[in-house]
Length: 166
View 1 (cartoon, rainbow, N blue to C red):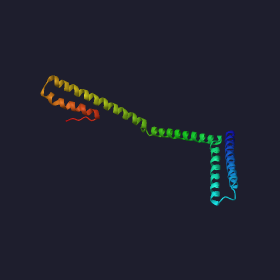
View 2: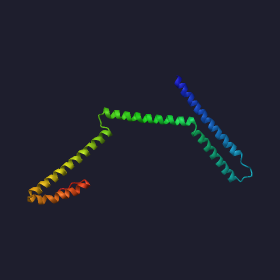
View 3: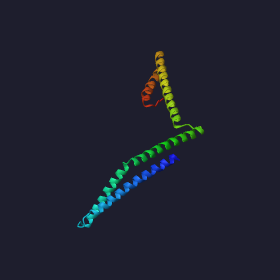
View 4: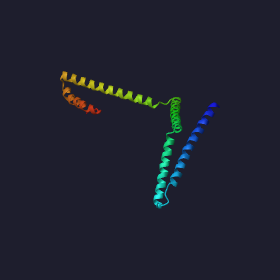
């Protein structure tokens, strides 16, 4: 009950501060409307009223937005929004866990592991191809003459991620 009365009092203070700012802006508007000289032509009177209204509104809203009550209210709103986002993230994580569904982090980790494994395998296949080519050159058989251009071509195309075999 004590916390409820504190919240009520805080809300009442914020409403009173807003009412004060609003009343001040309305009084400034009225002062502006009555400072116009009667000898001014009508379009000038309208411009002066409009200018005075905009100036009074701008000043009163700037005071309101810089007031501690407004800043405190915005801080509370942001904290509530952050807490709501955390709660929804936790809830969705719990739902995925209960459904035994993988999270995005799980999928990203698996994809990264597969890419590393693929690269290691391609590197190893390339090393084995080079070793076979070197062995064919040592033996000096007719297969060495046919295999050498293919191995060189494979090494040239490996730079762009594609392995061609002809």
